[in-house]
Length: 380
Image (cartoon, rainbow, N blue to C red; front, top):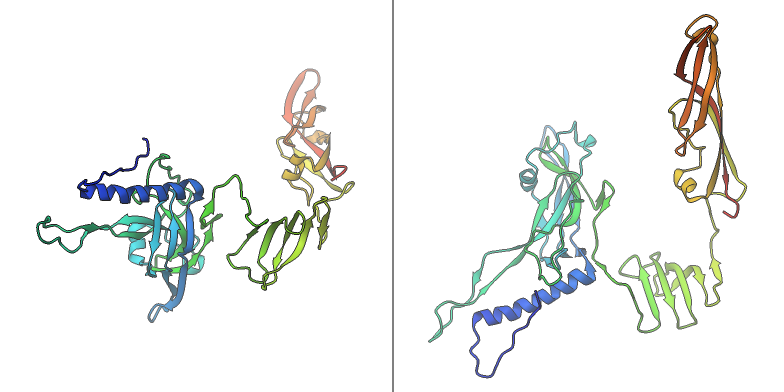
């Protein structure tokens, strides 16, 4: 649908719908900007704060009271989520959202992390002061854009959420923004821990969608923290003193201590040492015995990713092992190796045939000795 804006004429009587449309246009425009030029996530605050507690005698089990700190977030539709005041997290709400959580042995062995989400919610209309005189009896109305806290099931943080069409305004609050994780002790019905990352997932912060970042004063800085405190790492692209790319840490007084820099001529200067997994000519060796179907291991210090990238070259030698004749199918049986090799995944293919004179033949899997030499490729 084409985005449209209202136009007015002198003397026109404005209806409530006209004014609401004007407000809606501004809100839709802000949401499109936030949705298309920024990534969803937490912008400020919305952290989980713990206060240690213990249950009454005789258990005296430890737990924590949790509070979601006030803050700001943007969901994937461009809707603003503003939590104006700190909000305590309710164990009752947790059990309502997770009616049958996993029961674990004790609080010290609880492994399940449950995600905590916030989402937007529009509260009921609140009437303002009624109009007077010859105007209509009803006054205006307002919508309270509140934030609701929800607890997900363990492991559901990667649930896909569909983005709205390009012309749409902010969503209705169905989009959930992750703000943290909690552990819940079902024995005492209380939270016992909180975290900002769990199970390989971290709370997302609001980001920027951009194909170009251009500085206005000849300098662009990207740093890991909002404030340039001492030790905060940063990358600076600077043209004020000649083109340069610098990575370093802030001193806390507004300057950067360079750890790595590249000047206009392409010269690289490092304050530390260059470290690599190996140097050209370095060799690792492993040997052993393997049976048919076994995947041969890599030598210690060598990983599959390095092999796949060509950083390490493998040489594999396999030699069939002749079994004890006493293990053959009959007296006088002879074992003849048939095939002994490894495939592209280092899986052993090894088999042979027992021949018992005058004519009995039996094919069987076999084992082999293996030797793997891993060498760092030249120029690594």
